[in-house]
Length: 409
Image: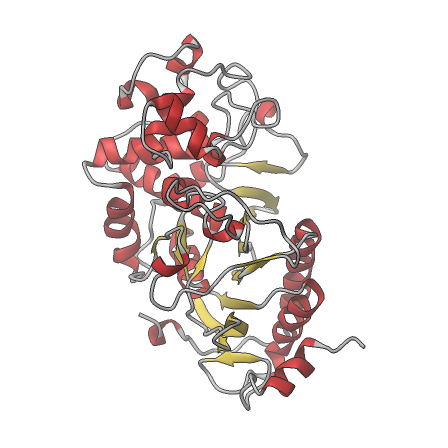
């Protein structure tokens, strides 16, 4: 017998009186109920334990809900401000950090990245030409479909670099300096986690701080985000208020990235080394943090993270050879789709145990939906998340005038 997620919640006594979501604002307003129906339906359909959703309109946070379970064993519900691994949503954060250094005159987009780093001589001379702009555009020359993704081979990269596993960011880069590019820098685009790993090291070299320290102090703190941080691989090193992560039922175990751990482990807790993924996939954040980031990133709420001319450059359409789908492109750290005189920007994130989506719309709507699971049909889940959120937002005839941002600091 199939039992709905809401029924399961009621049986387990996990839902509070206000309905399916743990909400900061009491019972969710009926006009926003479509969002609750969507998320609870997704959790049930895709067998994901929990989620958090934050929605803003015209710079005001109007919804902040937690759904389902942050920890199955402890029967702990997700809170509106629970922390989640955000995976590749880290890339827009890194982009804004890079562009902040450009605005401060410490970096230029056409500077050559490996000349700044000076970590060794590349075996492929084309690596010397890779620019900051090309890295942001995923146009540095690495194609993981024709080669491999070095961020997920921590033993091999460490051994090749003569370092202790799991491989650090620097060890991965030294290893990749011995590998060939798959295409000339700037001639094509191919999604590259490694390119954003390099950008994190550029930020460190130019700022004189660790990547995390620079982003937290120069980007996040000025807009009131204090709880975002780089995550940790091991479950016992979770941050306060961080959820647990769950692979799909029956998922195979993995070899731990830590040599001292002989037993195979769940992939979310040792199948990859998240500390070395900092600038391309390592952040943990609440859905509220991400929506706050969005409303300051486009300048709707002050202080703006970037100057208007920098924002325009960040989302500008790149050269035709770097556009693979008409009307949609990858800008400097964001997926972009033109909409009239404006544009929608977004990014998704995916790791074992993590499924995330962050969207800024041209109609002044913003949302972030974070899940602590990764089903087998994750692509279908992403489609359902995206389509469902647009549909739910489109059903709202009158948005609340409240602003919940001040309740979360």
